Each structure stands twice: as C-alpha cells, then as structure tokens.
Length: 164
Length: 206
Image (cartoon, rainbow over all chains, first blue to last red; front, side, top):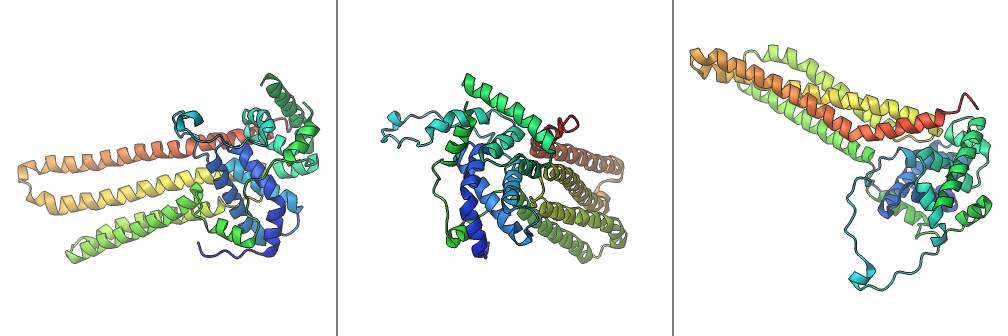
C-alpha cells in the first residue's frame, strides 16, 4: 500500500479514542493476534470513512458504529485453529511473566465471553458509559428495545459473574 | 456486582503499546490487511486477469489453426464470456460495498447479509459459466479434431464418452462450488442472521 495521507485531525481523534478501540477488540477477540488484526481493520475503515464524515452524527457515535460494525461483521478466522499443545513456564524454564495489572477484570471478561455478539455490544456500550439514546443510534434499534435488552443482559451478566 | 465500579475500572485498563503519532498510524495503515474482503478483492483481480489471458489464448489458438467453425463457436462463447464478465464486475462491486461500515449496526448487518448472498450467487455464476466455457471448448476440440481419427465403428461410443465426461464435470463443479460456498460463508451468514434476529427481538414489544 502506498504511504497513507493521515490528517492531523484524524490522528488526534484516534489518539483520543484508541483505548476504547483496544477494549472492543479485546472484547470480541480473545486471541492477541486477532485483536491486532481487528484493530488494524477498524483503523483502516475509520481512515477510509474519515473524508465522508459530515458531522451529522456525533463523532463518538460515528466511531463507535464503525468499530462495532467491523468487530461484529469480521469473519472469525482463528476460531477453528487447533489449540496449541499445553506448555508450562516451568517446562520451558523461562522467567515468570510480569503479573497482569488487569487480572481483577478477568472474571468480567470471562463472563462477557459467554454472551452473544449483541449482548457483548450492549455491555461494551454500558461499560463505556454511553447514554441509551446514543446506544439506540449506534445499534439502530429503538430506545425502548435498548432498555428491555439492557435489563436482561445485566441480569445475565450478574448471574454469570456470580456463578464464576 | 457494582456496575459503576466495574465501569470506572474498565476505563482504567492498562493500555497496550499503541501508536500515537501520524508516523505510527501510517505504518499501521501500510501493513497488509488480513481482512478476508481485502484478500478476496486481490484474488478476484487475479481471476479476472487469468480468465482474460485464457480466453485470449483459446481464441488465438482457434484462429491460428484456421478453424472454419470459429464463427459459430464465438457466437456460443461470447454470451458466456459476457456473463462471466458481468459476474466478475458484480463481485468487485459487492466487495467494495462490503467495506462500508458507517450505518447503525442493524442496517449494516442487514446490508451485509444481502450483499454476501449476492456475492455467493455471483461466485457460483462465474464458476459455472467459466466451467461451461472450458467444457464447451474442450468438447468442441475433441469432436472436431480427435473424433475423426477414431475408427468409424467406435465414434458413437467416443462421442457418448465426450458428452458424459462434460456433463459429469459440470455436475462435480456444481457440487464442489456449492459445498465450498456453504463451507466458506455458511457459518458467517448464520452468525449475522442471528445478530439481526436478536437486534429485532422485542422491537414490537418495546
């Protein structure tokens, strides 16, 4: 691909929103390589769509929409890969990896992994603190429907985290 | 479960190594995309190129051997090549459309489903038309140039074999093409259907 022309506005917007892009990638792809591929794909779609952003929607809504659309419609390529043989750090005689600073979020990620794609989207938007009107805009369903679904998925998540 | 606490902890997750500068983003955008759509777009241009080369070679060969029935063969082949070209450019167009993602999720998924189904039919059409063109030319060459060298008593049998081989080859291609498309897109289409259905659920009640 020839060198891409990246406008300062685009860089500033991505720098502002990229932590949330990383979080959506982690939410939809447990595999680290998949997360990188998905992140690259989202950035590519954002970059292609950037010139046509007309400001009709809020910038955050526009960005959440693209990120979610790409994450959900991406074909899962690595799902059918065989699991690698079990190896332990002890067997390899390697130093212990540094502790994961986000290990306290592991139960949440584990519970979310058991949700459907739409439920994941709802929880993601709720965790990101988006208001329900914006969620309705991003998902393309009515405000009332968001309320019903959100109530149900929060109950389900509570159950999953309680049983985990 | 205190969701507000989870939400604030969610925002404090330690970021991975992430690009920050225009240079970093340029490098990221320059990386080869691993998206299946990008790969399909590259493949389809390769297929179009191959088809054009093969078609030109076949026509040049027939012209070179001064085949007297070339005109009749062309009348039969040209609509097939026209159909193949229509399918290929349809595929390019649909693949371009698949890379748009600015709609709301429900309309995006509905459009993707429609486009993917269209893509399946176009791939199927292009494969079957190419197969018919190849089988047609091969059968023609066999009948025109091989059959006359077969002893007169065995000609009917040889002709039957040629026709049967062509029919069986078309049948196998049809079966393989359907199997491949189902295998490649089936699971993905089912997942998108499920997403759309789930989004629409409760819409009337709400």
